[in-house]
Amino acid sequence: MRHKIAFITTEYVKPHLERILPQLGMDATFSIYAYHPFEEIDGFFRQIPREVDGVITSGNRFGSAFRHMFPRDRRVVVPMGINDAEVHRLFWRLKQEQPDLDFQRIYADFLDELHLSIPSFLTEDHGIPLSVSMDAGREQTPEEFLRGEYRQFQKLLEVWETGQFERIITRYSGLLPMLRQRGVQIFYPFPSIDSIRSACAQAQREIEMRQLQDYQAAEIHVNLWMPNPAYTVESLYEQRLLQLQQSLMDYFGSKAEDMLFRRSHFGVDILTDRKTVAQCTREYTVCELSAFLNARLDFRIFVGYGIGQGIYQARLNAITATRESEVSGGSYLVNEQDVLIGPLGGGEAAPPSPSVFSYMSSHAGISQATINRVLEVLGAMPNGRLTSQELAERLEITRRSANYFLKAMTQTGILQVVDMHRAAGRGRPEQVYGRAAAENTDRIH
Image (cartoon, rainbow, N blue to C red; front, side, top):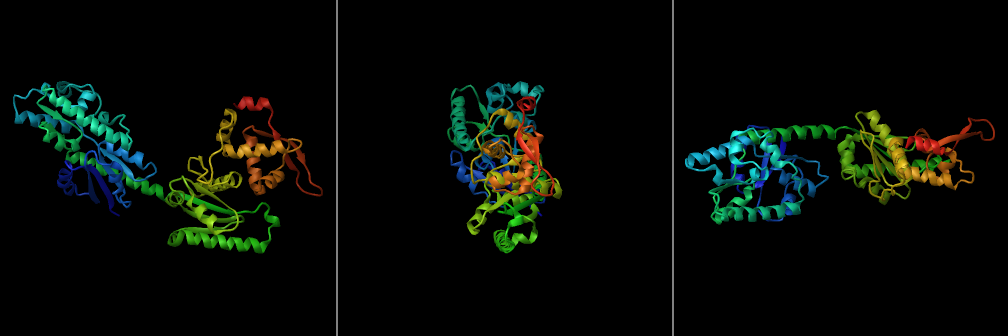
């Protein structure tokens, strides 16, 4: 499949790119979007179609402004900088046109910012490639981008009006037409065909890597509200499960053909890919799937997303995320680094607790909000003790999830097993949990 690559540049550079791009012989479709200085960059960025796979920008300024404006846009953004060879060629071209030209009478804004004189740049090794050093530390918001443009225009005009320089070289290609109208002898080092080809090749590599990542294994678990499945009326459960399945099919539409739906003991599990999860969660920020289901169904559901290096890890992560949804509300996601993300809409994260519990939360694999709720239930118990059955009933979660949370908090030293309780009649004894001793908490901290 041919990649669609858009160039973000200025009107001054656009003809240069139109001449070079057909010579590359690359298997890609190119489009060029030319920016006019001082115009609203937000509106300019919005004209770039969503179907574009990657964006190549003239320098890092455009790229950083684009990322700030669309922080969750997953399209590849590659800056096309100016390198040493291109600047060298421009200097020597100017020298050929005017043999008596004094390099001390040339001002280059990017060299001035790097505290480099032109003779030292031309004759000495300054240690770092110009394309790297020029873009270092240049992260800008769209507003900063516009202010920087205007400041640079005023600065270059002031430099010229001092009368100290016969030529000015700038990396701000969009300013050239306006400055030339003011009589400024100003030039821009156009990117070479090699630089353009290199930027395109990098964009294609990153697009291919992103596409491979999109198809990384993922699972979505949507569980029904079942505090105790053993006492659930079977016909009611079956009716709700059918409603849930139909609603899921309506939500995904034709995309459902590329997914695997499985009925589980608790609801529906969906085997899919990372790209689908990103779409359902608006790039891991808001769970649109749960919003759709909650509007359609008259019973509670819990949504958890899991992403993994393989199907097994994706499934385990989806189970963990769904358990978190049962306790804390909202939807959760666990990624391939086993990082818990959420809640995805539907509520704010719990306020931070003391540092010892923040540390324990990161090692327990459950959120701070869940730890807080379990501790609240434990604190409300008359004897300060708790079984998994009691936790399940008070939090209205499954017994399986209650066991998982209690064991996770025991492994990290928040809780400890303080007794064993045997119900009347036969059966395995049930563990009773209480707060861990203070010395254990101090040791972990």
